[in-house]
Length: 64
Image (cartoon, rainbow, N blue to C red; front, side, top):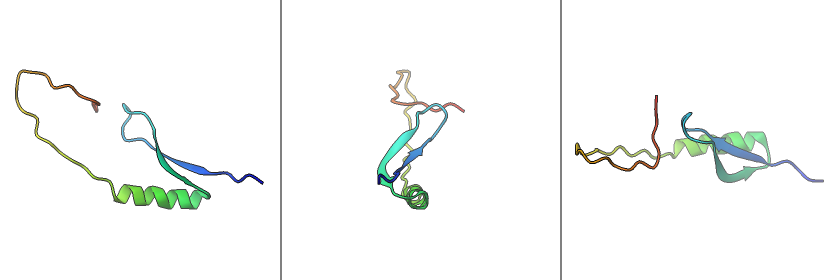
């Protein structure tokens, strides 16, 4: 018998696509726990942008 696996997909912003995490879980409850653990270990980095006339290339932009 083949059991269902649950994938975890996250969406950071409407302008970015859904991202599937590497981990697959056997139950929905395990997937929810894994998603909560993932959210607890997120890292954020805020950087200063130099005020130059030269435009920087952005890999991704977020519009609100």
